Length: 204
Image (tube, helix red, strand yellow):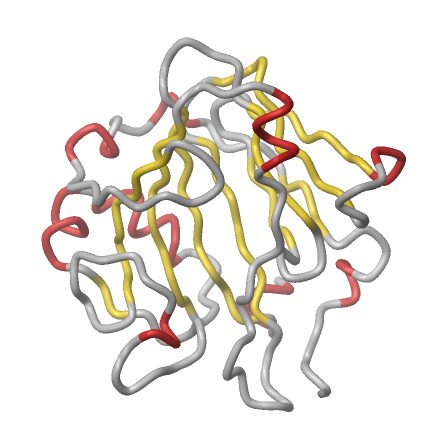
């Protein structure tokens, strides 16, 4: 199938953006409604946008009617609690699918390697439209934590580690790269994760 993909992802599959000054914003994630949803570790998620605006985190294709990870519907309760996080997600102007804050409990390197996975972002995505990628905006200061990326899940030589201090921002083709976070801290890590459709808005 042929999709619109951005050239900046061709070589590595990810782009590290300039860090965001997280200290200027309120800690809105502390007041969000979280759903007990396990994904790559001991996690909970607070949905800001879901398939049809409900307080849930399932893949868009598991709904009736099913759809691809685009055209997310804002979840009123959490959007009201996190207006700045919502605006940050909207800032690129690209089509948004799932948008949520993840809470990840501390883990080990072995845990992270076990949890390496690729996403199925583009299931049901119509051919000829924009390829879906994901942005990760770290909210808490997890200077000892890293996002682990691998081209080959079982080959450490393909591993890249991206540090995760507060304000770290990276956009990843998570259907191409295996990924997981190694978070050795003592407190949960929080991160805003947003699915975006590739196109001129995101390229800007």
